[in-house]
Image (cartoon, rainbow, N blue to C red; front, side, top):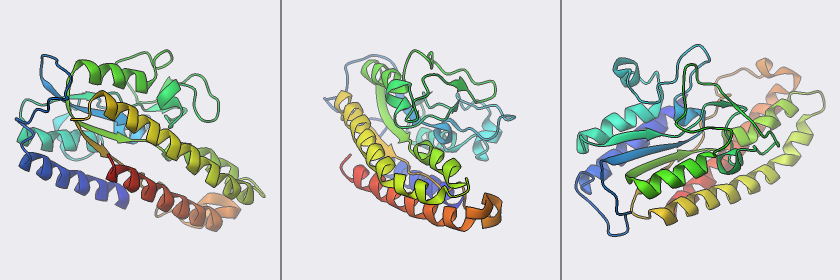
Length: 256
């Protein structure tokens, strides 16, 4: 979980920068003309939704203060608490999804995921997303929300599930080479999708502060033996793919 810890530290630094810039009072002329409170909008996959395990309810509204503060319901709740120190009236809206199959950069835009699955079910125990996840994409929900609310801060993280099918293939006998050969295609598709998503949302409201989260390594700390006969090769591939992905997110963030 080292990567997740670094992410939280990075977002904490961002809070300081936002406070210094006057998050509580700044209002750009390009912001949609709406009435009502200011919002922090969280978008992305199960990491952004605060999913832990199927037995632990997802706290979409960040109402479980003690658990949220301890980080047991994900970074979004921690970040929102920090943002409210600068803007006490800031509301939270989380559209992020903990679903099965996991939200990837394709399903974010069109419900159908990158592997062709056309439906999904809620994986966050007791969680109720604020839109019908099988008729409305997260992209559509985000576009509508941004267009009709005063959104000051957006966090967005997606991409880990784009690579997940390769893990299953790499674990099969003789599957390591096939999985490795597919990585460039997955990386190219992900880069295209991320650019489209970020560009579209920025067009709706270029005044909101947009923060991109990269992917921590879910295999970190696992012994190679836990991943079968191809374990050592899988760990090496995962490290390389994640490093490339993180570099791409940083490059995209630089122009956001």
